[in-house]
Length: 299
Image 1 (spheres, rainbow, N blue to C red):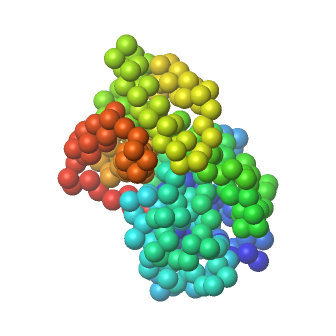
Image 2 (image 1 turned 180 degrees about the vertical axis):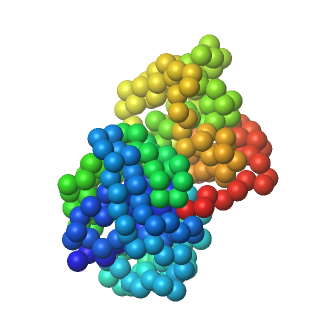
């Protein structure tokens, strides 16, 4: 029996927990702030349910084979009490988060050699504790190697397609390039398509090309087709399109993952001497637009 703990059962963590719990060979524990009785996920095909063990106190857990951390990137240090109880020398820790700095963010909490960064594309929304709507099939990418292959095997038989990639660095940066333009509608609270004009096109193009330039300086391979597709997606975004997680968080009054999504472009741009004026301005504006009383996600 493989023992797995999910820390942070929000939209992503809860969906992962529910799918993994469909396999009787896996023992699933959910580590949450808010208790709930079961998980119910409306998937693109059907509803799935699960009744994993749900714990709210780190004192009630013990070391497991896998820890999957699915908290927001700004909430890293809140996982420390859980990791101190869940991790021993044989545990592996999968970091299922946005951004490109999975290992850096957690290396002060657990040995980096035990960390497995995870790129995930899984559109989902939590409607209440333990209640999630999964909009599309999910995709997971992890670095090639023994740990990556072991994680991929856990998702066999689920509707989350997992693969190990020898060029994982490019995968996470391609996702970030594709997501980088979402800062504009998060700030304006409007879809980009209906307000598209030459000025908006210049802003979106600036966001994306700056991100791609930084990605390449970091060693990632980002085809120009990814840049073009991201700009085209923004140009054709319909009014009423469900916003990205950063927009949803702003509208809900939650903290936003500004640094992990666009702040990192500015920080690493400075490291490489690459100007990122468009991202820097929008990061500054979006950070200033957030409520000083932003509530924490109760996951």
